[in-house]
Image (cartoon, rainbow, N blue to C red):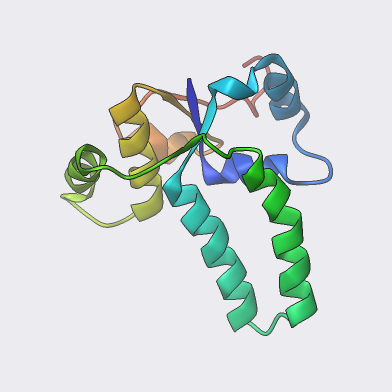
Length: 139
């Protein structure tokens, strides 16, 4: 089973996503794909930043309209941050608070025994979590 990093969800929401990611997604059952509650927070944060940076109400409505079907596709497959996830997250954050959101996604995947799907190999390789980058050829 897999936890999608926010960068993967963002890529999948594009009109023309990465072809390697698209091929991987077509081969993978939707029942195996999950999101961390952290990804929902990151999407909402992006919408709020757009609002703060002067996006019009109609632009915000369009962004939300575009994202809602993507998020609805994961209904019932969004993983909460439990006490065990929080403990692992604190362990991940013990030395520094960099990559705050990525570390929560990693802690969630570790707790559930899932693999993170990400295009961010560099950071996830430091978190002690299994990860896969299907955006690279041959994955």
